[in-house]
Image (cartoon, rainbow, N blue to C red):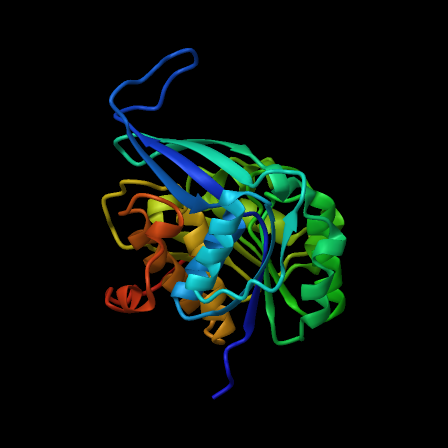
Length: 314
């Protein structure tokens, strides 16, 4: 059997300050009666932890501050068996912080102070890029400076490395990068930003996925929350359902999905099976509070029943 590929995550690391209350506050409103939690977070770190807990061989390239949050983050990565070799410390900027409100239905709103994440420069990721081999996988998000995202994608593509981009938080980026990607994983909001097509049903999901593929990405997955995910490739148009669960916190569901997806691909699973695996992992994640704390372990995902892909549009 071919050994699993190395998963190289390049992205952000934050400390999440979470308040769970009955409702999300409206502008100018104070909501009383919440419960406070402080958890390690950041999209890059979340995805790295998800991948590591699910059995991936993971290295993380990130930048933290020279403060208690940064030191705690590195200790946490070591506990999760994530290679911290590529994490740098900024001597001036503090570690990133996210303020998260979560309502009784598990919906959230988030404000991020990126801190040291905003200083992750191309030269900070050069070491991990030099160490890449063509069998590795690179997983990226958009919580770090776009010039660094651009640099990582282009350099990885030049080395023949498969790049998975989770285009979150939603923002425009260079269109000529699409052709350097192996896979892109927007949610409905991000897919609309990329295409101008509002995703409201399966038909519009297909339209958006085709529009993204027309930009040069061979494989597109549009995540659909509790409905699962829509996969579109040269040979497959399929909705992969998610197990029905009662969500209590959706904060890191997308990060869990992307980490799990990358693990399955590192194990050379077909895309359809990789998406089904990721949907199962994310369905467990949303039943728990917190970001990294909610990431499931492999035994938990394996205990869920197999989800048969529901193939459509073929």
